[in-house]
Amino acid sequence: MPVISVSGLSKSFGGLDAVSGLSFDVEEGEIYGLLGPNGAGKTTTVRMLACIISPSGGTAAVAGHDIRADPVAVRRSVGVLTESPSLYERLTAEENLTFFARAYGMTDDRKVSGRVKELLQFFQLWDRRGEKSAVFSKGMKQKLAIARALVHDPPVIFLDEPTAGLDPEASKLIRDLITEMSQKERHTIMLCTHRLEDAEKVCSRVMVVNMGRRVVVGSPDEIRSEVAGKAKLEVMVANPSTALVEAAASVAGVSAGAIAENGRLIFELDDLNAATPLVVRALVESGARVLTVNTFLPSLEEAYLRLIKGDGWDSR
Ligand SMILES: Nc1ncnc2c1ncn2[C@@H]1O[C@H](COP(=O)(O)OP(=O)(O)O)[C@@H](O)[C@H]1O
Ligand SMILES: [Mg+2]
Image (cartoon, rainbow, N blue to C red):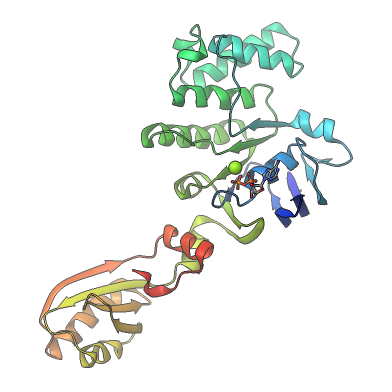
């Protein structure tokens, strides 16, 4: 049984279809990424699944509860990190978490303080627990905001742009903590991001969304290999010619060859390691004066940009 099951979910704002007929399942313990550019509909999707706004069409079940029939039960089962996390700046880190634990209905003081301590320690804020969150750095505030979303130990967690506004070092720390947290507590996590790196490093599966619609779903590796295309070999020669391209393109394992605008010869290869030496040898035997040889593996970034913009192969 999937923990999140979404079917035809849609939301329009006036004439704008922010989310159009999304369907997907998230399994227990997964970190499922919603990856897409600004305005793709990620936040709107999460707000519907967390029962903050109601859908215009379709439905979903979250932790076994229907979002239309039982929004109260859904809200109890989810923790949400929103795009603009609201902490009480005049409360200390510890007071913030304690406040939200009580607000979520935790009444046993020992349980509350135990959970708060556990989270502050996990997010490396225990030593700073007595300081007001106003004085915290952006990264510390973000850690506290994630801890806040976890305080009542919900089975499902929505993290909306958890690394937004953070520098690379703080972003990496947040990514590492999310991964570790998922292993330790076995929450099901849905992570929205416009940052490819977040999706690639943290998520077991990713759904790429654009303009409210699903573009593709798969593991980062699957998306890379399905969409990014083949490895490329780029050879700079002193005497480029179509004859050289044709000679090298007839080598086994070469699926395409061309002269790029910058005069370099570019080949698409099925297997970079096997075909590269054969191509270079064929070029030399055909009279090429080879200056440099570069190889390029397809990147997830290339795949992602292609999905979002529909770019062609020879974009470099
Ligand atoms: N409350 C709202 N009223 C009107 N339009 C909205 C509202 N919320 C979001 N939108 C629009 O819906 C689209 C999707 O927004 P959003 O879900 O925030 O995208 P993302 O989180 O992927 O950046 C955008 O065009 C946005 O301007
Ligand atoms: Mg958003």
